[in-house]
Image (cartoon, rainbow, N blue to C red; front, side):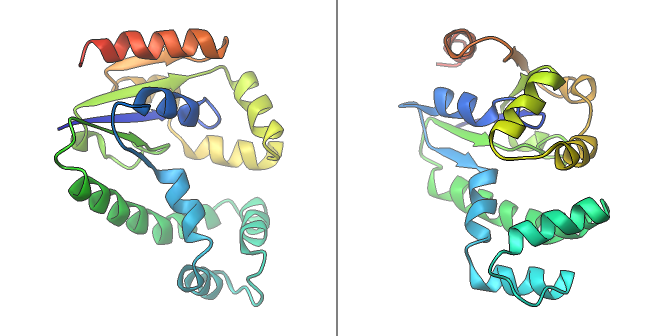
Length: 188
């Protein structure tokens, strides 16, 4: 099995790149999707509510974002809860798909979490900050949250050192797809 990690900075196009790469080639693990699913689980909401002193957790994600804006150190508290749960799901996914020729992993903090040794190939999706900010806002995010999350990540320069390939995603979908598939041909 060849494990391919896809990472990049906030709103660089990792999800789109991951879907292009994994399409009909192998199963895709998405850390963001796991986190989204966690927020729908009562047990997770209870843990987070207790940790952050939240009484009503019907809109827990919004409340946590507000707490992060008020104190950016709250993101570290949140990561201490989320990261072990995401890793556990990643290992389950690996075990379930161990007979597949290729597995794909979309992990935003792959480098920051020191997960490089888990992958045979790491592809970094790169985009200019201005473009990433536009994409983030288009999905309903705000500039303050973008800046907090962006500061939490390593710089592109630092991340690229650990990656086998860099794909610039500043143009259009057609160019992104061509560049990704050109890379993947090397491993088929």
